[in-house]
Length: 142
Image (cartoon, rainbow, N blue to C red; front, side):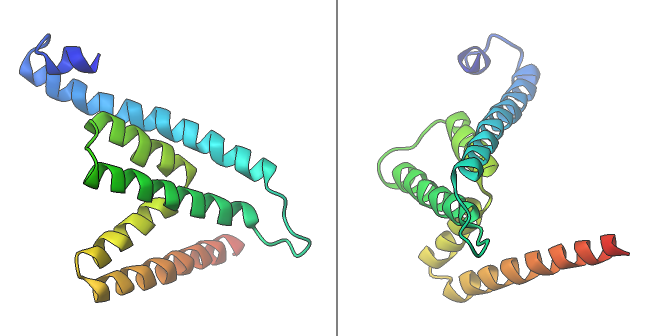
C-alpha cells in the first residue's frame, strides 16, 4: 500500500490524504500492540510487599532504553522509513509508555547543549504532570 501511494497510483491530492491516513493507521496499530505489551508487563510484574509499582518502573525503563536504541540507530547507523518510525516510536513505544518520548526529548535537549532547557523541561513536566493529576483527582472528589 505504501509503495502504491508513493509511486503515483493515485492523484497527488489523494496521495497526501492517503499518506496521512497511513500514518494514523500505523500509529493506531503500534499503540494497540504497545498497550497489549504494557498489560502483559503489568500482569507479569509482581508488586513488592510494600505495594511499590515495579510494573511502571519496568515499563518506563524498558521503554526509554528501547527509544534510546531506536533513536541512536536511526541517527548514527541508518535511517528508517517514516512509516516504520511512526509505528515503532510513536505507536508501539507510545502505547507501551509515554515516558520513553519524555526521556528522548530531555536527552535531545541535553545533547544539543541546552542543559538548562533540559533540566527545566524535566522539572516542569514532572511537576506539572503531577499537579494536573492531583487537580483532576481533587475535582473528581467533590
